Image (cartoon, rainbow, N blue to C red):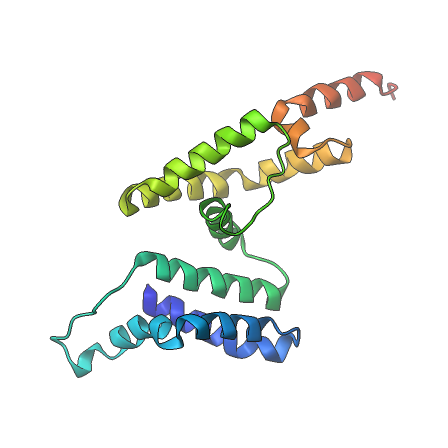
Length: 187
């Protein structure tokens, strides 16, 4: 997985400047250079060339590093193609939930109590051991894929009625939409 993820990232990284000249690839290059390209590419190169020393052991590898590489590859893909695939959206949603605070993602729910509860859940999930976290992520991924179209339709319908995300989460969307339907003249 790590080798394939890194190869995908590297292809997209190399193609990106040919599609967009906005400096994003340079930003990624600088970010990775600060950590060291070798530390990022090392596990992939080790696995790719395992036949050279079949008894060697990979010194250190964290699963999160593979997720970072996949995340960067999906960002490059979106910036080249214009949008994520549905599975990329699901992965991006997970990454945003996992790194919500570290990434500085703004809370859109103005209900302070519910926002605090969501933060507690994110913190609890982030504190789980890797296997438990991945079990939770898999369930969330499946739910996202199975319900994405329904969620988007609900949000689009509510936003067209002038509702905020907090209104939607409060259940006001159904109330207001039902009231608007009741006010609409019969055809």
